[in-house]
Length: 141
Length: 124
Image (cartoon, rainbow over all chains, first blue to last red; front, side):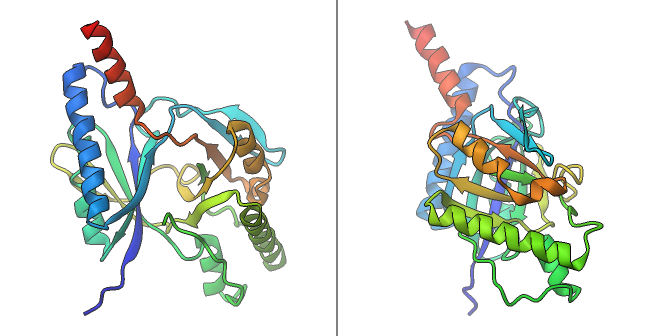
């Protein structure tokens, strides 16, 4: 039996899902969310996760210009993440489908964690660079 | 948490340039590790799924515009936002069009905190 696990990241998108809901409704969703997180951790399927603050900075360009984020509150803004260790993508998607925020407009992006950045992988694949220097990465453990 | 946004930043680079950037990125990452600043950091594969809605629909990417796609993350142990921003500014791929989003990690969900405060206020 193949018990090799793969790492996935769930990115929760949307930081405005609570608009128009009563405090009691919101509390129910968030309580469910915490219970879901704890259960996944107990089952060993989730290794970690955090909410992100609704503020931050964006750094871009050659000079490393710093700007306040455009991501404070929007449908696409990332509000938090879970780090999963699962058998396959189907399991990661099934977990994402349990997200208590989904009925309220929150979206879950399911992304496989890669051994190598896609630019490097492409370059190795094209024979442009060799893969001998393995870029060691560290997962959320 | 640093979120690296943008893909295909290698477009138009020569083999030598690409190799140089890769080496710089590796040296940068290893340097941060040596300083004990990195809790975790990994690239994300360019594919994936999006789950949304009441019916929990599953769709293939794209998730965002190409320049917005999250290509990787770095979970830092920084003293404050300022230090995290300074680390972000030292990332070598900024020169090639990558944008880095710097976001403080929270222990408690901000929505939960807001609603708790509201309920406490209502009870008072």
